Image (cartoon, rainbow, N blue to C red):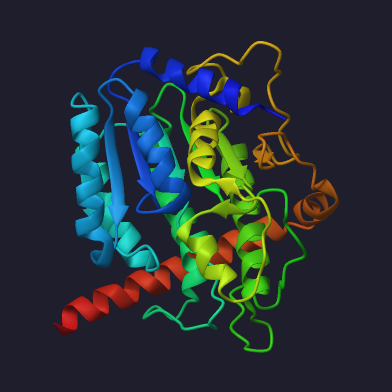
Length: 328
């Protein structure tokens, strides 16, 4: 277990990092992502920070960024409007960033929710809980790979449920059949496909450090909503602590395939990677072992099946977006 004291000591060292790190936060309008954004922005020297907000949260998030500008006037903040439950919106948001930047140092993704009120498909025909937690994240990574690979020490952190992967419904990957869908099934499906795809990307981009973190119950607005459905979570982690730990995973070389940002704290070793080459972390930042589930799927080539399926989904979403635009 990495103590919170060590986490905060390491995070204070962010002030010594090179000026001008380019960071994209997807999911920072509330919860863990918001706290991670606040912690990183407090320490980083002259960063260029992009955040994404859907229309309904755009104004409130702009207010948050205004306060961050006051606390760290050396930083540049750019707010991109997009609904990340839609793949085509992710394309537009990321393409804007690609037009403005030559590299991305850090991609932080924490958007998502559990669909406890049932499945209500997006205009793209996808379960929005799976879109935010899987499809949109993979699409953002895929499009940003050229810029990530131009960074000296590129990092990706995905906050979901790394280490809790389970058997996939391989015959119905998007759980289109109502008999296959449930809020729990969609969570397991999104987590498992996300890990398989992040591992595939890590193998093909060996300089890229990728963390898939399971934070456990965290005292966020999302947890409060879940509790209204009768679920109980004793002693959840505070949102502030989760944000600090998330930034630690984002910047410490303990979770890197090569040195480049903050040194591994004294007394700790570089974390162990999964068999597929990424860091699957428990709430306290220790590596988890889920090879009993993942190794069998890798050997059967399930990762390639999921990749090909996801590419077809992305193509369909963008074809639909173009057709809708042409109709206007």
